Length: 311
Image (cartoon, rainbow, N blue to C red; front, side, top):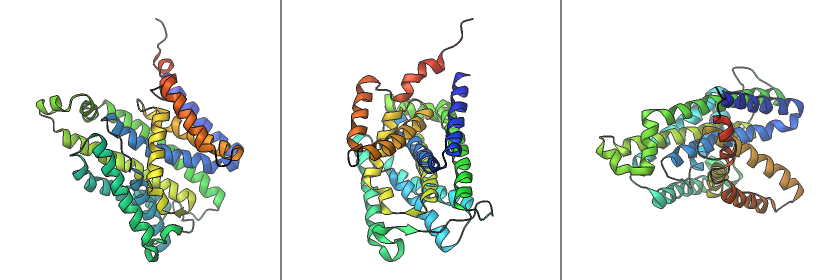
């Protein structure tokens, strides 16, 4: 019950802030899109694996949105679905190869794939716009041509709904048979095989889910910015996603969004006060979190959320 109330409060705050302060719409949208990508990485962390290249799926989805809006003038709803589907398909194909590896090999191979994508996008200037990226006009949303303010408000509503739906979906997945089997890969993969459950099949399903969530986040990010660049898939962006996953905590889907909001708003305000030094502040915050709360920000509120009223 407390968890539901907490989620309702977070949704109310995320809705009220942009309404009270319109300039906050973009930071909130960026935080939500980042949270969706972080949620994808948390799925892999559940299996004890960390990817240093998962931003490539957000990048693929972003460029799909860019091409769809620029060349085919598709509606924003179709663009979100198409971008997410492309990321899921890429995850399904790459996942067939990645499920064979664990630990540092898994993390670095994901990084290698992402850097190949970055290089291709950066050097294909005639198609992708190169390092300058691909800019596109604001698409219609549900068939309606909206001004910037109306479009951002509608996109914010969609992003909040997507965050709520995917968060609930991921939590149900963690509690399911496949989710429990995914967690067993971290603890004892050999015993999982002895039970007759294919660890590779389970891990492949988790990997595809992870890529899909990153793609969904990348689609919202592209629509918010109206611009996609190869930097979306650069290793630094993948590192940020892992950073936020550590900051927020991987024990619950809420951790992804708590971490994403803290990261975006700390970066926003610290960059305004300490130009060029915001990375130092974020690094210090991460160091404090590692020592004071290794389970992330969610671990600080988890006892209160799980507490029951005395009979």
